[in-house]
Length: 207
Image (cartoon, rainbow, N blue to C red; front, side, top):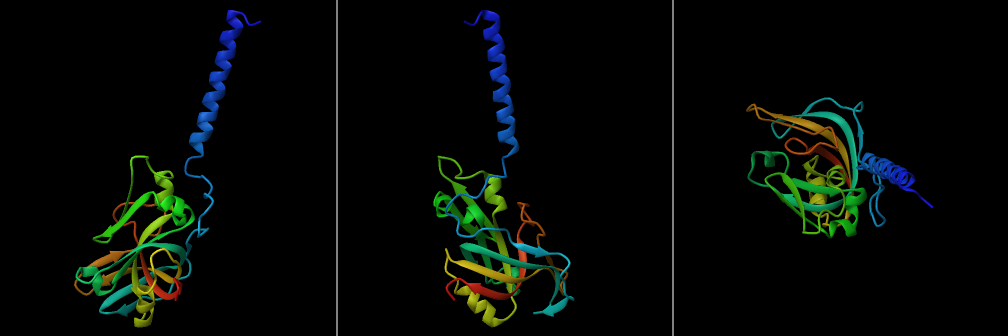
């Protein structure tokens, strides 16, 4: 039978256990395994050591900064014709991998694109996975087709399809002093967080 002193010691021990468990759970936020149902597993591949010389494309200087391959699910696509960037990049893909290729997650998000931004929101039940997982496993990517054929193939990729893009992350500068810089990271957010890709090859997407 527990006396008052022993009961207080037991409560204190339980409180310590609960605190430790909470710290472990908090430390693991952001490293949650991919949920069952993901269509694409793995991260985009970036090789910062595989570069090529700068070149000219449509009166712009294209400077490759890393070899880049992304296999992902197309969440949404947006065509651009009238902004400054459309001179070289007519198309943006919002792409998702790991949990952001999972219908169970995507079905609880409203995904949109506008003005070269990719946006998502969730309903009153809250996000289907932690917001940092959404950000880390999806991105808006500005596409520069390397040829007319590549552009046609990009335009034929249906929303929801799995597609693989190969090429380079690039920085771009125009003769008028205008410039555009690619993100080098999959974990950044906000302005400048989009990848700018010179797309040399397109596979999948029902092509």
